[in-house]
Picture (spheres, one colour):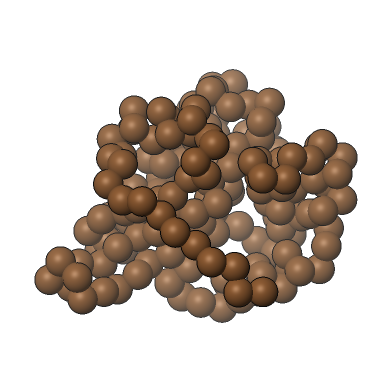
Amino acid sequence: MNAAAVMIRDATAADVPRIAALIAMGDASLPMSAAEAEAEGGLPVYAEAFARIAAAPDNHLFIAVAADRIVGTYQLTVLPGIAERGRTRGKIESVHVDPALRSTGIGAAMMRHAIATARDKGIGLVELSSNKSRSDAHRFYERLGFARSHEGFKMALD
């Protein structure tokens, strides 16, 4: 796939089932087939989550489209803060590319878009996290200039 043929745009509610399916296919902790992921993407919880994202002005969900098909997605959240003299951060999350199209330039195009969008929004630093088992993704982010600077922690509350 030619990365130049990829268009990145804001996601819409109609895009949500495919976005959720891409995320499900890329979930390292719960591998799913494409058919299982497509079924997962149709669950109402994803439309509800999108509504919350769309209603929050500091949250932005994007999709990468090639040949009229959604082939990637990522979310950018603007995080104002006090640290580093009030530097605004951008959290890049849920970066997923169709598994059949990885290593074709789609992820790099999305990250260029994320960084340009962050700059346009006055963000001074972008950060992301990646599942520890995704060593290929870690090499990809490092090639783009991201540094492994912190150890991440999480706690499920539900």
